[in-house]
Length: 320
Image (cartoon, rainbow, N blue to C red; front, side, top):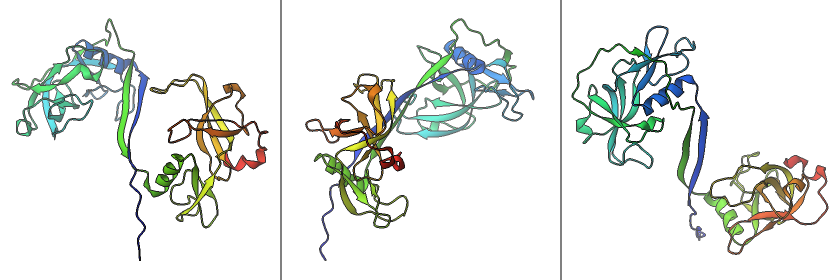
């Protein structure tokens, strides 16, 4: 029996990235402000333990804790793991060890990087010292890393600290990013290849007869494979929408704009797309739209009104 040739496997690098902004409470604000001033702060619990990094609530009693203390910038490695191939954004660009360090005066360990010549140079019990960053902004990266130190363990008494600094940090912005390679599989590959020909193709469930766009290779309701391809659209109906007022990075679209769920004619699942060619405040549920393809584009750039009368609510209410 002859076997049909398989299409080339599609894959593409994808990056999900956004700046995560958060405000800081008094404890975290004091901790990060202290790092800017080469000072490591912890917090004392009701049972006289010192936690570094500090937290706002006692992990045992859940009581609010605010008793800040200053600990040393030297400490002892409690456990470690070697990182032979640093990734983008990690503390060092040469092989290093991830270490948990119990700073002198603290009862818990702080996770950070250790600059060491190799795994043979790292062991539990190793004495280390903070290497401060040349430029400090009030972030955990103000500790550039730890480095081996020839000091001896100190039984220091953590000194009380007000947590007040001239240029106190009140918030941080962390760049959250996920890099990965996506392979769509057979059903979505057929869908993507059809889009390149300015066609939208879904797949029909052999049991319930619903047409899914984009297809996933199986019916989510019946749990059976879908293989019958069905061309849908090109026109469709706006089932619901939102008005976007926040500019996305690397997306050159004038604000505000509308992003909508669109039920293409013949489909039993709404997909999403941007609505153009109409003022944002005139977009509405039931609006009839059609895709706009740019030259050489592999997918619709946006959807615009067809000029038809709005669809009756009963025709799309099950697709909202």
